[in-house]
Each structure stands twice: as structure tokens, then as C-alpha cells.
Amino acid sequence: MRWARHAVPAAVTALAAIAARDLLQREHALRRNFPLLGRARYLLESIGPELRQYIVAGNDEERPFTRDQRRWVYASAKRQNNYFGFGTDNDIEHTAGYPIIKHRTFGRAVPASTPTAGHEVRLPCAKVLGGARDRARAFRPESVVTISGMSFGSLSGPAVEALNRGAAIAGCLHNTGEGGLSRYHRNGGELILQIGTAYFGCRDDRGRFDLARLKDVVAGAPVRALEIKLSQGAKPSLGGLLPAAKVSAEIAAARGIPVGQDCVSPSRHAEFADCDSLLDWVELLAAETGLPVGIKSAVGDLEFWTELTDLMRDTGRGVDFVTIDGGEGGTGAAPLIFTDSVSLPFQLGFARIYPIFAERDLHEQVVFIGSGKLGLPDNAVVAYALGCDMLAVGREAMLAIGCIQAQKCHADTCPTGVATQNAWLTRGLDPASKAVRAAHYVKTLRRDLVKVAEACGVEHPGLIDPDSVEILGGRTSATPLREVYGYRPGWGLPSTADQKAIVELMATEAPQGGSAPPSPTAQR
Ligand SMILES: Cc1cc2nc3c(=O)[nH]c(=O)nc-3n(C[C@H](O)[C@H](O)[C@H](O)COP(=O)(O)O)c2cc1C
Ligand code: SF4
Image (cartoon, rainbow, N blue to C red; front, side, top):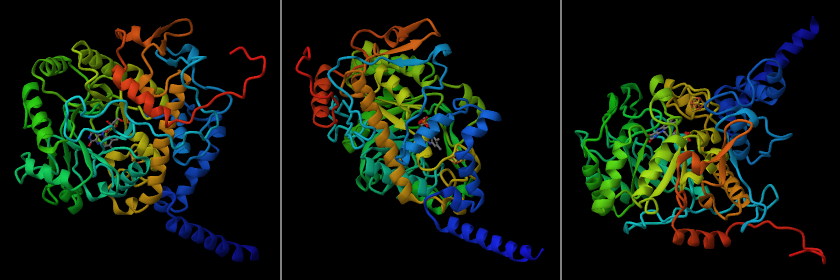
């Protein structure tokens, strides 16, 4: 056994060297946090397709995000080849509810054909945020894709920093979430400041909303809009509790609360108690800051929406944007009954709210933002066809910066450092490199949206109408989205003036495809 005397120390030295390399590298949080062990995941991932054929689930079975969906996000974030070979493995013929997008043979726009064309395409919103209500700081968002509200506290500091830097690189807005505006949000990305029931970051010592503090926060950071959070799809009507142990000095500073004490978010706002007082508050915030002001809500009972829109029509007060969050949306932590069963999924919920605005002629004056697994191009296109103007992506952006869907966000043991405050685990997440991934992902999503729009013959996803999508009823039937949800002609699109403006903007932006030069006998 003489060879063993040399081989064992040599193997140990080699493993120690690999472990040291894992610890020091910055590219992979998992390997940094779990030297050697973390490599097993990459190995399993690489032989996953072969293994799955024999023992585990298929490409489309896992939830919330299937393996195919995650593979698309990971590849897009790394700017690797995100194409799929051999054809779809979705059971299109037998899946009721499956959306099919209808391309046009001849259309105004033609998609560019090389895989990388349009990586850097600009994709601004088709509406001016706050324009219809003449807000002093109205603006046209540069990117229809935004990063959804996820607080510092539920996400780690480095994760928030990566998303904010990524937003800066991709030129998209980054929503702070309800946990206040932390130093991690100040890395160049422009912000939507979310105001939740606890008024974190803009509250006084007794937890009451403090307008002067809000104005200070707005003045000290690139805040472009305010979002009043009424509810979130994964846990509507519920407050929350951040336990004392997690209330670090940094979290306390961002939220304006004492260090090391339980931090409670109430389940209702104290500044308004009905639609009338909500609209008063919206107008106050808009007048005091000049910013566009919107609301974020999940969809349950519709009485709130009819009252709100009646008041908007009759009194002239109003919100500048409405974010509809689907019941399939994510959360850091929530009771199972809420994540699984309270509030409508995005498609159904949005298709109930949009008509309520449209019936009162308010739909062209409001920017509609959708969220709930809309960071995947197929879901996003359906959202656009239903009348969305912008998308907010939450968990897909987390996947882009390294989340592996371990679903431990509530336990403070997130292995990739994305959703934990544990110092060892967060040190693995390198904000600089993950920012680039977040930006690649956002840019790829925008590029795919433009390509699909062009395949439908239009220049911008906001111009995809509800007749361009059909919902399969199985193998032998399909119904246009317009019929499924009873949309009237013209619904789902921006106003004629906004359509004209966005077509002009896109004409100078998107790389256009085409054909080879026509032959002398061409019939054109
Ligand atoms: C870890 C985590 C934290 C979140 N924090 C907030 C929050 O502070 N405020 C909020 O309105 N929504 C919050 N959300 C919900 C997301 O903003 C988003 O609405 C939802 O996840 C749906 O988008 P997605 O399917 O792209 O993730 C959170 C979601 C996650 C996963
Ligand atoms: S705990 Fe899992 S699902 Fe949650 S952020 Fe971390 S890797 Fe992602």
C-alpha cells in the first residue's frame, strides 16, 4: 500500500486547493459558500437531462418555475445560448388554457433574424407615466421591464445591490419594496419607492407616516415614482413580522425603526380608510413630490375597483399607475393557504380590472404594470395583449442573480446569499458580477418581446392586441383572448396618439429584419 501513502495526501492537497479556489472566486455564490460541495450541483445540472430520463421529474413539472423556464433565465443572464433544440416539449395539443401567439405573414415590422440582433434594443413604455394627470415629474419609462418590489430585509444587501446596479446597466426601474430605501438601493439604478402599511423609511418614531421624511428620501435618491402597496398576490390582506433577531443596524436604518426589536407591518394603512381618502392621499403625495403615484394590489373582491374608478371618473382625482400582482406571485414568507389560495392568478385578475377602467374611459390614462411570473416571454405577451404597459419581474430577477429555487427564503438559510441576512451566506454573492447577469436577463427579455411583437407585425409589445393571442381548449378548439375575457374593440391598446408616438420611437430603435434582395422576376 505504498502508493496510498503518497496518493492520499496528494488527493487531500488537491481537494484543499480546489476548496480554496472555490472560496476565493466570485463568480459562483454557491461554490463560494459551499466549497467543493457546491460543485456537485453544477455536475448534477450538467448531467441532469440524462438523469431525469430515468429517475426524476420532467422539464415542465417543477414549480414555481419549471426547469425549462429556469434554464432560459440562467442562460439569458449569462448571455449563453438560450435556444432549445428539437422542438417544444410542452404538451400543446392537450393542455387547455395554453396561449398561442398568432404571427403575421406580412406585417409592418419584421424581426431581425440573427440570434444576437437587438441585444441592446431600447424598449420604452408606450405611455408617459403621470402624463395624463400632468404630474410635475411625469416621464416615459425607458424600459417596459422593471424589477419588482422586494425589500432589503427579505433580500440580502448584496442581492439588492446587484439588482440595483443591474437596473442601472439595463436602464430599467427598480422598485424598493416596502422595506425602505437602503444604501444598497443607491447604486445607480432609478427607483420606484414603495410605501407599505408600516411606512418604512418615511415614518416617525411612533410608526406614523411622515411627509417631511418622505420628501427627504425622495430628494436624496433617484426616485422616479411612488407606489402605495395595498396588497401583494402571495399574501393579500396580511401584515408581516420581521423578528427582532433579524433587525440589524442596517435594516433598522433603512426602515426607521429601533435595532433588535420585533418589526411589525400592519395589515392595513392608517393614512386612508376608503377609496375617497386613498385618492386624497394619492393627490397629496403627487402634489408634494411632483412624482407619479400608483397603487399595487392583488385582485379579490371587485367592489374596491368599481368605487375607485367611479371616483376617478367623477372627481378628477386619480392614480397614475396600477400594478396588478397575480396570486401566483412570490413572497419572502407567507402562510401556505395565502400563497396557494387567496387572490386571483394574474391573467384572470388583470382581465377583470382592465375592463373596469376601460368602461369608464380611464384605461388610456393609467399605466398598467403586471406581475406574477411575467418575466417569461410567453406570459409577458399575454399580459401585453390584455392591456399591460409594463412588467415587474421579481423571482425571475432573483434567478438571474443566482437563486436556485431552493425555497428557503423564509428560513434565513438561502444557500446562494440572495434571500438571507446570514453574513457567511451573503458574502458569497458578488454584486458586481451578478449585476451584469441581472442586466443581461432584462435585456434578453426585452429583446424577445420585441421579436415576438415583430413576428405579430407590430413594432412594440404594447401594440399586440387581444386578437393576436388565442387560448387553446385542447386539441380541437381555440378562442381569441378578446372573446375569452369579453374585451371590446380597441381595448388592450394604448390611445391612438400613444400608439403613433411609440411606433415613431421604435422605428429609430429596433434593428429590422428583412429578406435577400428580390430577384428580377419578383412580384412586388
Ligand atoms: C423575496 C420576495 C420579497 C418580496 N417583497 C415584496 C415587497 O416588499 N413588496 C411587494 O409589493 N411585493 C413583494 N414581493 C412580491 C414581488 O414584488 C412580486 O409582486 C411577485 O413576486 C410576483 O412577481 P414574480 O412572479 O416575477 O416573482 C416579494 C417577492 C419575493 C419573492
Ligand atoms: S432560498 Fe432558495 S428560492 Fe429563496 S432566494 Fe435562496 S435560492 Fe432562491
